[in-house]
Image (cartoon, rainbow, N blue to C red; front, top):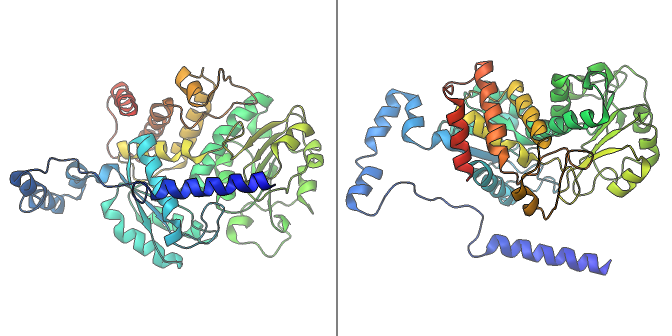
Length: 429
């Protein structure tokens, strides 16, 4: 116990040093134009800047030509549901939003500004984000608590003509869906016939269920559980988001709901799932225990419970990490590149299928070296791509862009998909 305490304290100190030195924070602004002479400064600011400003005043879309709008995402939070830290406030959420902004740049070459908004009223929050939206090509909502996050996400998607996603909802849903596509393939199960039990009824859970239903799972085979137990039509304490998935089955507990189930999705808290519960599930049970830092059941206990188990967590130190970094950079990359007005279900499903297909391909040597592995093959211990796989950018972004064009939300369709893929490969290199 003492060693664990010392290790945790050592890691805390290392993390604080990382964020403090050599200068505070994880991102900075870097000029992209020459600026060392009087003539260059005159072009960059007054009087030269008047020309693009007037062009944009005459045609709003000219902002994509003369400014960084087309490659700029706002990462916005009010700090009410930050990671596993809870409601710590807007200012305290800034390290997390900076980190998200850094990942946008590292993984997809997207510039991102973190914006912490000290506002808890959903309508006022929406109006503030709506007011700053003209300067951005997309909005990534982050770490906003439920149920307010549902209204905020919906209203901004309705009011803005640029991509908006609440990553805790839709980013998680994409990776969960990708993982289930492959887990079902390994188990030899048809998603349309699978029985699903979801423990947790917050933003990630609701969005994941919605996308899984779009994949082909059936509402009548779905049971949602919250802190009070199964969400049934017989309860009178349900908000609209939960009532949407209320079952007519008379179930009293999570354990009862799991009898014969094919798939357990946990987006709740540690230690709510037990080995005896898993043993009551159907053959080749699929368990995604995504609570962080400690999953709904410890991996060792879960694996011991069933030799035919297919298991994933949200942790990087276990196989099959359901990690949002596999999704949001590439969702936005594809959406921005075709100037999509929104990120719809077709684009999210395209991303999920692309991720699933990538995990079934041979893993290149650079990925193995990055993780210190000698081999990695598709199967029970590898059915989700690794976040450092360089193929993600081209594979997933292209799938998203194609889906945007197909669904009609792309304002600048791609004419040459081979050239687009090559541009992404060069960007990655």
